Length: 448
Ligand code: PEP
Ligand code: MN
Image (cartoon, rainbow, N blue to C red):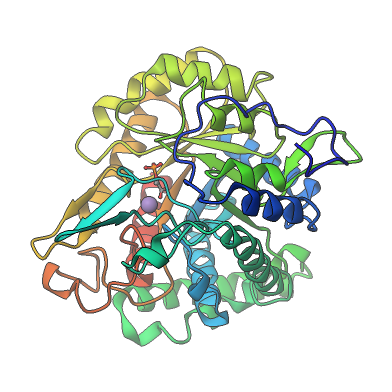
């Protein structure tokens, strides 16, 4: 490795281990040039911010806070526009406001944003009629368009991934630190939305209550900074390890390595094998990390992951994002939670009700039903309540726009509507109405 001479003990221990889902780059030298450049680029996030998120997730692991993590399945370079980023952040802030106000539990806000550009795929190729081409692996790797040119992996896209992440994060920081995300803006986030749906109206009533509560506090002379400033963190699946390693920096204060491509990184269901490169890489950085656990995950695998990723049993270091499917969560989740809890580990348990509930609609589009999504969240809460553990959060694929990708929810989208506005580059996302509906329903479960 020549590209990071300034970090002699860089976390390159993953090299040589089985690394699933790495793009078949056609030109290794071109890749190395990009990685060398990225290794010299400024960090996107800072060690202290990652520590702060780890502390907040520690509160989740102890049962004192709830996390809302959400955003696109796959961000796209074309999606880096002020309106789209604002609408996504706004949707997450609205969900967080609903949950915080309804439950009086602090809500940790994490976007699947500013780095979610690469996708694991179940097949290396895609066939349409007689034509077979490399599968789309996210804008970090190739283009969605079904042509040989677009589908050829291009390492220069990693540079664009960094730039797109930087541009997105810049705007996210402006929104969340510049007053826009302050609680006195609860109405503003809803302005373009209120009359459009039952969820918007329901939210408007809640925003009115928040206003009255704040007016009361101000009248009493209380005006905490927290009303103006919001902590909002970024996360993505750490899939392309060359990229993640090139963006790893040693923190001069602590001497620890941090993956400065995002605050939290997670390992997906397809790349979580214990002796694989992804788990090894994550074990070498100090960021908070998460692992997706699907229906085949065993309790012993979960315990091994804890041993490898959280050897010091530090609350907030490791989150498990479970995605079992609505009809299986009640059977598959309890043994995991029981054994992990019995081991003494304190992980944050987060429910991803999206990835276990995908089906193909009659017209051929991949979709998810709002009722199934809600049913998995309910199952997740019921399991934790029965075991006396804390349902720590939800992980949602969503967008701030009025897309028609998932069916159901208050402003009902049905199967015939899917064609109207299906824009996802990968999996179907909740639109803003559906995301808010889910927040209201989840708030009731959390309050119970
Ligand atoms: C995803 O989060 O988009 C994803 C691919 O999830 P999983 O790894 O759980 O399948
Ligand atoms: Mn997805």
